[in-house]
Image (cartoon, rainbow, N blue to C red; front, side):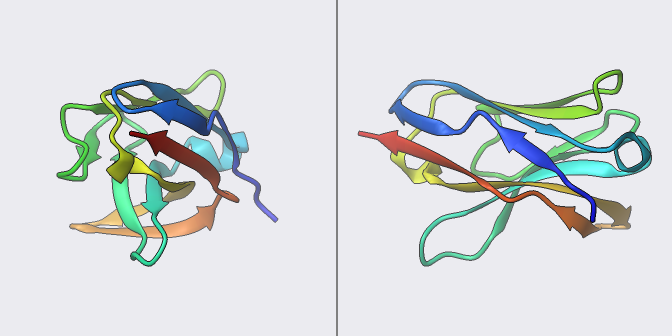
Length: 120
């Protein structure tokens, strides 16, 4: 069973920053587009950001300009730097690994999720 191991969640005040990390097996990391999703209570899971193996990025509209996704190919790790956080960013954040087909991001592997809570 493939494991994506997330870390870095926690509680932060509005306006603050957090960085999430996700480590993946090298065989998965090298060939997959890595991404972050989030799911708030009572809401659907939504794409936050994704990054291809070559470094191309896409962001959800609600996080553009505030969040930055990056990957360290030497460490098989993807990061999500979150800044200017608001209470609306409160959610469980999931690491994902998958393939992009046109505009569709098909996720094959999920992390266990890490809680991010932003207080007002």
